[in-house]
Length: 377
Image 1 (cartoon, one colour):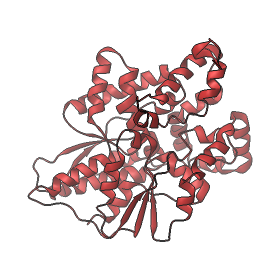
Image 2 (cartoon, one colour):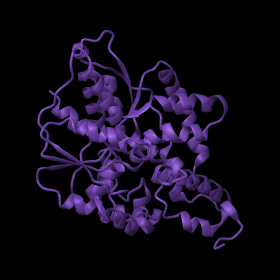
Image 3 (cartoon, one colour):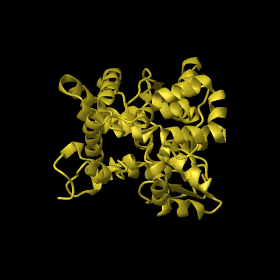
């Protein structure tokens, strides 16, 4: 009885949901499986229809477009965004925290590397399988424009296991639009994504994601955004989707049981502290990540078990949320990272998680594909 009867247009309800991180933890931890992340995005859509959509919301929802232009203008775009006066002016105009630094775009994207490379066909003979198994690697916006080394490591890892890798046509899953309640735009993104991925899924080829937020959008959100035949296609696509950790763990287990035997790894770091992405944990992907990292010889692997890092996509960039974002991370994650010994490597599959850890602790978290591929022998 503390909010009015305005329902999905109620400013009081907006204040209630403002601090929801859309981490999807409720989906797995709530006894009745209430999907608060979905409810919030639906509420924001209806609320903004009545009260208007702020410019900041539209800009943050256009993360792909910003990444494209950042890449086109790099390194100039990186230089400008790194200048303190320019960053503060932009932050003031858009209501962002001036403390935050904009991710640095790469001039040479993952897709540019992919289209110009010649795959090493000799690698496919390493497992003695004919024909080689297939794998489709989803080129998400963050991997493509900001961390192409991650995509490269995933490709090399798969090829060393004897897989033939394909990369679907460039498409954005719409995760930023979903988070911001821009559901009409998100639905169009979902339609484009499903049309591209449906033939791949129908062929039985696994669709692998390096970025857990994009994985959850395609697997968990798209079937709910679409209707009719497209929804049926989205459900087929969802069943084909796997995080890199899920796919790699399964692939290595299959090799272990084959006549040719499995792959070995060089001794890893003394300890690995894993901070899994919230959506990865909510959709059941944590055990696979721990099992995969546990294959590294002489390495003690532990789960940070720290809940959300506090960044939550663009949440931590917004000025009014900066303090809360930091407080969430300080609850457990940041102290664990700061107290880690010199022989510990921090692993974080989520792009925003790595940004958050770097910002508040100065520690560079690594990704699973990079760590595993670098130690494969």
